[in-house]
Image 1 (cartoon, rainbow, N blue to C red):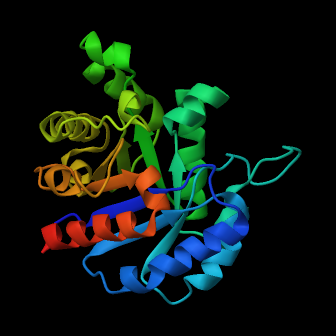
Image 2 (spheres, one colour):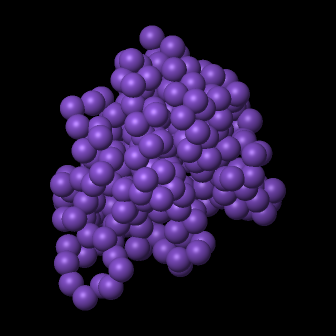
Image 3 (cartoon, rainbow, N blue to C red):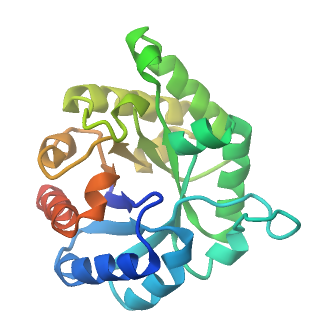
Length: 251
């Protein structure tokens, strides 16, 4: 059985003080929720403080990005060596990184390798644009992104987040059945890249306007193993509700 994973991507939101208040307001309730992996991914500036707040708790910490070099003259970047003392997970290849910062499949691949080398578990994002979806190109896009991201890697498992770009931050989530169909295809491609055993062990999450109202339907699908939550993870009550629903489904 693959464990359900609920990860909150806070993106470029919360000051340091706001981040600490948010995680403190969620910590007690989240600690009562068992049977799932709970992850919060705040901005870089808050990682150290939130690590202290979450010490000895069941809530894990993730970063939103990293650079693929360990050290050097890369002004403004954060290396895997800097992150490994702070967090267990890192989001890589989010569509916003690809679109706004020009990250290519090769760059995503380098970042995945760097994270794994440092002992940080990558959450690798893939997903198609609206026009690609409307043209029936979803599978082609997903296959290309996965093959580029995992090129040269031999893994026993990987965490993938399927995030259709047209559903991110729009309030328009993919239907549960459509999301599940895309995720089933992702698992098929993973079996071709990593082998059947690794594909079965890999957790594939859905992301894109996930909230407390659609969580149960999404996570009840056969191949959806959790959620990468955006805006709803910035609201303590919403994120707690999503985690509670996930835990109920996991039993």
